[in-house]
Image 1 (cartoon, rainbow, N blue to C red):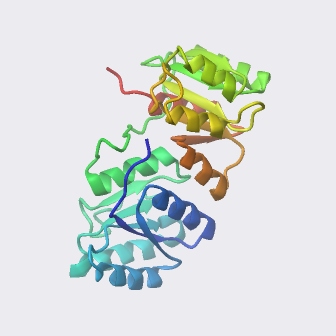
Image 2 (tube, rainbow, N blue to C red):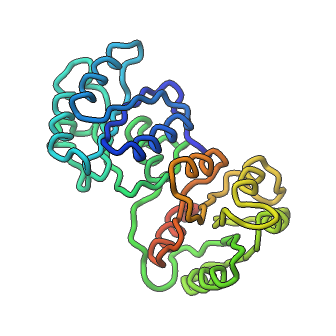
Length: 276
């Protein structure tokens, strides 16, 4: 399920228009009030303007790839100003998290780039909501070796038989149980009487595409399937407009084609249900 940022005012600071656009669309899709700044100087001006408005400023996203030490200096300036001291900072690509350097101990958080939707959800949840249950949280892990600690039951929706066979083989060697479907319509028929921990959904398919199938799953069209089941889009279309459409349909995360085995395993074994 998509998180709810209703009533939250967020400022995005970055020099890359496409990255800012993607973040802007994501925040707006989740219900937040979003503002942009293309450089650090403008960010400080906008932050002061927003903080002076009713409700103040809740969160500032700063791209450390773009600004580095300047971004840290901006965070320190925000911390020193009374109206801005309560605003949280989310550093993009800040590992290890420089909260102490930024003068924001306990109020600065980090998310690695390239951005994944679930990582952004988790980071914003930690910053604004203390890890609110509405935001799915997961521990960052490297893919383990050998069998998966908790085997998943996975529906793989992929119309290319070679890709489907290769992906299925990798997952089954990790101990996961995999059922395949060739298109969205076939997937819905399977979900009418079977449930899964995770769905890997190709987007471009005949008969019914992955976006349509995802919308129907989220709408509760499949009796045996939890409408909130995690869905990962498998797609070569990764521009901001495409991502916005996938997220609006209810996709939880993306795996860009062609993908590497470690990336597949990392997302499969971290996005699914918690061990219980």
